[in-house]
Image (cartoon, helix red, strand yellow):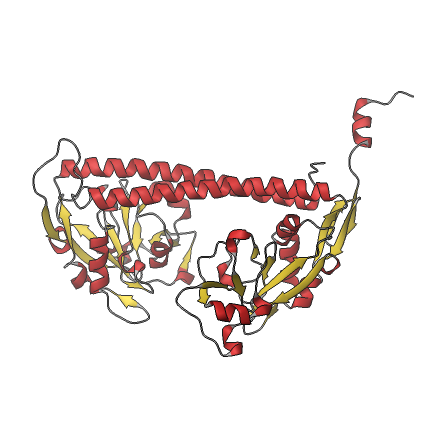
Length: 440
């Protein structure tokens, strides 16, 4: 009997089965982690043996030390001395250990490689150490623990008490989708590692571009570097000479919705990585407040070129946070709670230039100087008016703004590429870890 080509393809398709963790290939198994690992334990702290942290030395990792994307390149670490490291035997790490956070911030995963040692961990981290002859690939385990399959198990078993936590026994009982072939495990892990390497290279390139822009701003906005064709002295002016200041309309986050007029909440200024907001381009994403326009003071409505500063911050960097409004069409846009609106008295500062001129170290230092408070620092309209900025000619301002705008466009393009690479990696990981896509 002749077999049609389409039927032949169907007969060669991999078969799948339903398991406790979902559908996986028929030749894979849903296995508990305990069946493959040599040890699952957690760390301890120097205080348990009467020792203290130091200002530098050997790294001491906690849950927050692991990035959300995985890996052990910690940003938030403590340090202990060598003597304490040797005494804390249970919390010492070895090459190849896989870490997972089990308290506070749950489910962050790290893989210990040569450059990460020596180091110790606290009790918020569990270490999984595979045996020498384990059937499970270490790198495959690393990616399994970062997968949605394990994330779901963590959500199902986490206990909400003083802080979220899962037990070591929970970790031992994690069910993993395990290919019977170690070659297939390693092929999956390598494909995901290659995707991570691309993402990391994009992150590093983006960081360099941001540093380059920051350095260029510092040089160009202070006059230390002049552009060809421009000369002469710059004036130094107080913001009170350039702007008038007023407050915004108070409304809570609960009052905002998708209906009404655009509303600028101070929290959105703090969260933004940009120094401007384009009302037309971002209209759909801007929160709205349902209120008649005749109930809003004209000084609280944001026009093209207005600068909006926050009047309160929980950290030093936030003391000078602001956005410049791009609103040439005059769309009703309400400045909100904890904002200070700066409306131009004259045209001495070019509108695009305003996006950058408050970002130098010298200007930020003035905002910090005038900020008052302990846990939350605030700055008043009176004090913002005292902050000074160097003011070149409008033509030179435009030339500087054009260069920095081009840098912004390049950075935005790289951010888009990075976001796409992360999305592709996420989909790829789901397909490979569940066996929906087979490499072998």
